[in-house]
Image 1 (tube, rainbow, N blue to C red):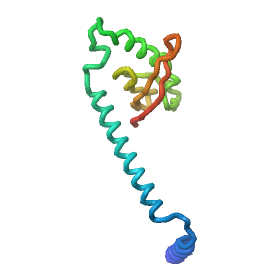
Image 2 (image 1 turned 90 degrees about the vertical axis):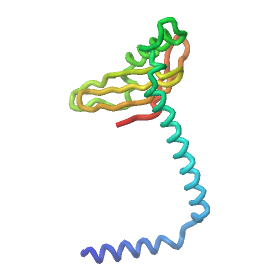
Image 3 (image 1 turned 135 degrees about the vertical axis):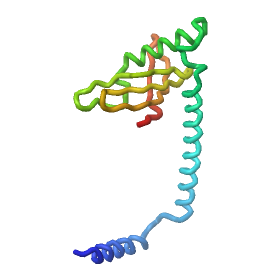
Length: 144
């Protein structure tokens, strides 16, 4: 089969599928606008998180030890450090995933980088404190 035959076949398939669609142009326009709005909201969220990441004022390492949040941030950081199962990737080539850097950004957000000697990525976690000083970590954004 030549390229011309393939092109003609694809055109026929495309033309055959055009007539029976129940999707209206208005439905597509509505979906497009919804996705466009969601995209704008996500970009705004990323911009806000980047400001937090680049702001050194909230890093627990730089907070005064007398700060109300200092001890809490240390506990959160330690909890994540001891939770390698929270890392959203699996190790490759015999490596073992571990956290390189963990920065508690505020009362709900953590920036962390991790690697296994082969794969190195960064992640933003949302966290919540539960009963008995336990923490739940949820990946919100992963940078590769």
